[in-house]
Image 1 (cartoon, one colour):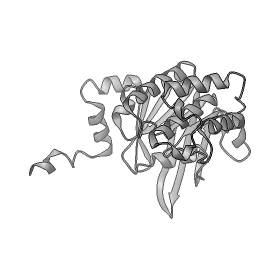
Image 2 (tube, rainbow, N blue to C red; image 1 turned 135 degrees about the horizontal axis):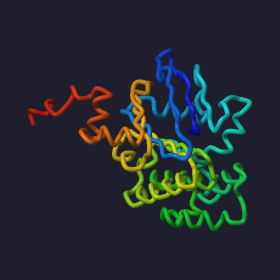
Image 3 (cartoon, one colour; image 1 turned 180 degrees about the horizontal axis):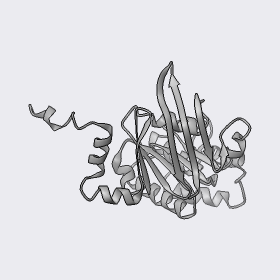
Image 4 (tube, helix red, strand yellow; image 1 turned 180 degrees about the vertical axis):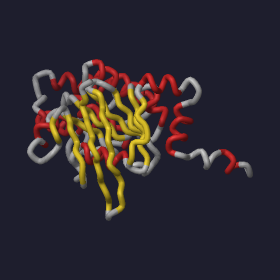
Length: 253
């Protein structure tokens, strides 16, 4: 099986406090992969390392067959896009200027780009903000703008950090539709979330991260077997050890 992403013994710390501890993970090419974990598990730190925004202490990151390092960084990044939480945007650009500028950097600014922008912006109901400054957009519209722009760069690997945060219900459904279309085109989508419902019916494979370590890797077959007897929420609680803080704490209510 080909892997769009391989992580080998990855370590990262803040002020000597370990955040990622010898993390190992393989993500299949052409899949929707979900990384779940409680707040503070290290999900955003991992995304930061994978996108080159944070410097790792040790280990290797291999993307589309190339190790992420200074000599390969530009080669890798031309095939990778990301939507972070919060999105990284240019505040003084209009939505249109931001999208076209990013697409030009990726070399995807062909004759059809304007039509693609119009169709995506209309689909996600942000077409009225086409010539509005980014700084004037709501948090949900900013997230949708970042998502549309990332798609238009035509990546082979797309990182989405909490992609549905602040987004309305209708747009969440449309984002899921687009994500499935990307997967059908052979594009790998890597999603992080602390909301189990976000990934349960969307992702092919799921990994559970807690305290900087991968506790479990659940492919579709494994999940089907486990969920015959337990819900994904129960499986998650078993791995992260939260069952000791259950409903008994609310007996006074």
